[in-house]
Length: 91
Image (cartoon, rainbow, N blue to C red):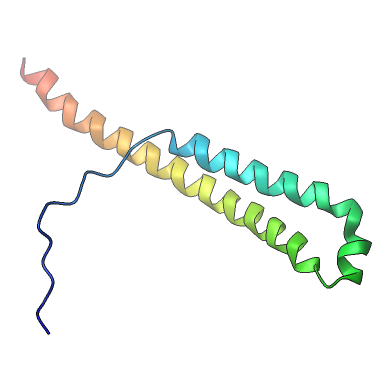
């Protein structure tokens, strides 16, 4: 079996409002949890309580994601600032 080689280069990764996207997703998970919470009895009767816990887990993991992307964004900005600083000083 021959090794597969790509015929073109991979595209550059998309950079967008990552912190806002992860924060929005986290809020949605928590809202879904809170909306389903009053119906816990129905979910329990039908064996669907995992829906609630999935939403809560999504919100909790989202909090970790917010922490991570904020640190990543700060590191990217710091790296960009240090790259620009020597050029500005040389002028």
